[in-house]
Length: 289
Image (cartoon, rainbow, N blue to C red; front, side, top):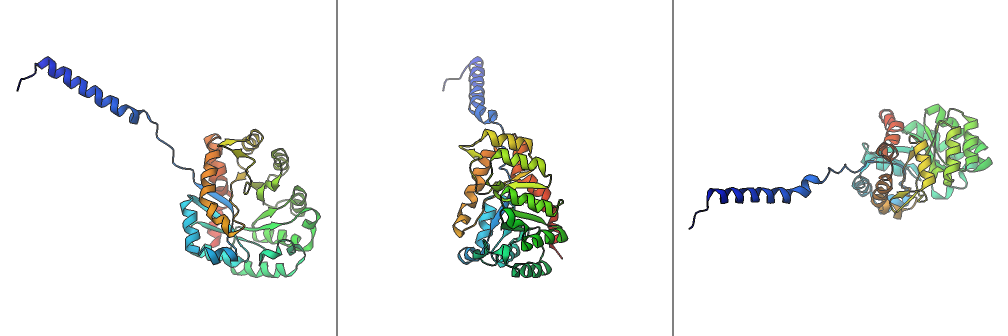
């Protein structure tokens, strides 16, 4: 075999080294991708028709697959919440709902037996909030609702209120120090939500079952202004109000990360999980007797 001259060997070695660098360049040029945002889901239900179709172990598996850091769970009846909390006490934050069945959504505000039920559960179990409950307008001043607001104060719990702005105002008049998580941000416009947040320092909003704030991975301009003005007052939520919605948990977390990526990273982290963590995870110690 013919031997190469030393100069040819050097040229060959340099060419091989250059080819190696070129082939490695794309990998070297790619910046490290941030880890997926953890999600604090502030609005989940695990009611009687859900646990019959989706056992606790399967429900917890879905929550973990979605990458949830924490999940606030209420149910009709409260047995569902207790089943899921027992299956994943590291993940689930229990919330006490007034309803014993779905049919009480419209009647509970005039049913005094609801209070007996809630007081009994509060003696037996620990929670981070009362709700999610539905109340609108002047109904917020009915005796049953007033007692729920009192129970929250007595037990130092948050209220998770599915309400119009009027009912939120009435609950704050009953207890100016109440801490209210406004379900679905009241389905109000971002301008009205901002007005309410300016008035009430102890009001936070979940964005469950809304899609007007984002689409196609982009945040709506009016909602962007709300998020930037109040980065510490919003949380995401899935709202599994029917059993079928449980199969949307993973997709909803993916969609939430998509539009959150259109916000400054610190704002995205707050809405994704830091706000919920600051408000509710600190209450986890009280869940253990």
